[in-house]
Structure formats: C-alpha cells, structure tokens
Image (cartoon, rainbow, N blue to C red):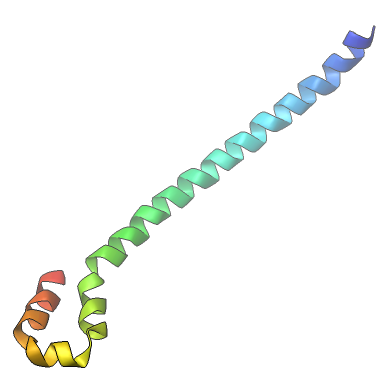
Length: 74
C-alpha cells in the first residue's frame, strides 16, 4: 500500500527534475556559445590592448616592434 502512495509523488518529482535539468543544459549551452564569442573578441583584439598598455620606455626602445604588433593584431 505504501509503495502505491509513493509512486505518484515520485513520478511528479522525477518529471520536475528532468525539466530542470533540461533548462540547466540549455542555459549552459547558451553560456558556452557566448563564451566562445567573447573569447574570439578578446584574443583578436589583444594586440590593441598590449600596444596601449606597453610601458612608454619599451615603446621608445622598440617603436617599430610595437607598431608591427599592433598592425598584425587588427
């Protein structure tokens, strides 16, 4: 008798679990797609940031190298 009473709530709980796992999986998939998009922006524009953040004394010693690195990254 107890097994019969337990089956109905158990089925409802399992259905709720599967729905929540499906929602979690779709959120993870969306976040993963956005991560690859942002990673592409960060790594393709890295030269711009490094050319801006390169210390001034290095720019004075190697101006052509900094300019070349900046052009290649664009």
